[in-house]
Amino acid sequence: MRRFFVQAEQVDGSVIHITGSDVNHIRNVLRMAQGDALVVGGPDGREYTCYIKQMDEREVTAHIMYVQDTQAELPNKIYLFQGLPKSDKMEWIIQKAVELGVYEVIPIETMRAVVRLDAKKAAKKVQRWQQIAEGAAKQSGRGFVPQIHPVCSFAQALEYGQRCAVKWIPYEQAEGMEAARKRVQDLQSGQDIAVFIGPEGGFDEREIQMAQERDYVPITLGRRILRTETAGLALLSVLMFRLDEDR
Image 1 (cartoon, rainbow, N blue to C red):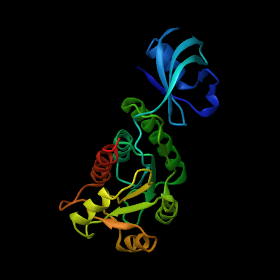
Image 2 (cartoon, one colour):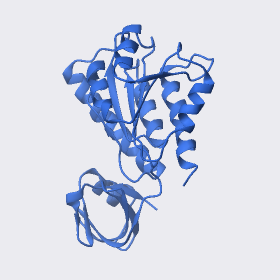
Image 3 (tube, rainbow, N blue to C red):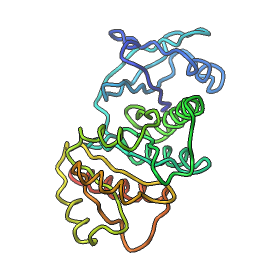
């Protein structure tokens, strides 16, 4: 069933008002008609199964048949703090991270990052990244569209991550796999998790020290050196299997 997303103000009792680019997609691309069924995800984490009541060029009005809590979300919110990579790797990272259940993605500028974005370019990038997140959320059946934050500094990212009960920063000089496995197994349902991933050049030792001073824990991802576009997704995959196992 086709899936779309709305904001809270678009849900009005038993009716949902779909606007924006989704209207053209529904009418002219998918060629849906009155009576056709669709699923709408809201910011409250619930799924609305609806049928199209009426539509015009500006709006599709959908009548809610029933509502249920989404089954696609992890019991923990995972915040991915991703060091800016080169070229269009960030698009790939965001797409796959959304498929794996990430809650938010926060792009960060780090000491060894090759990419430097001015404010104008960064704003355009974030807009594009948010569109990719929405497409990935639709494809993977997510209950909502994860937010892609504006690019921030490493210090700002550390501050934002303080909201999380679990704070990890994969680092090649971290202690062994047994310690990493235990940390994953000891996770509790409902704990927010911050994951920091460095750019192509990795994190500078001064950044690791800054993170440790704020209670971030360096962990290893194994004996191999992973690319920046692989490291975060590898850890997200592990977390997805671990956190879904009790459900």
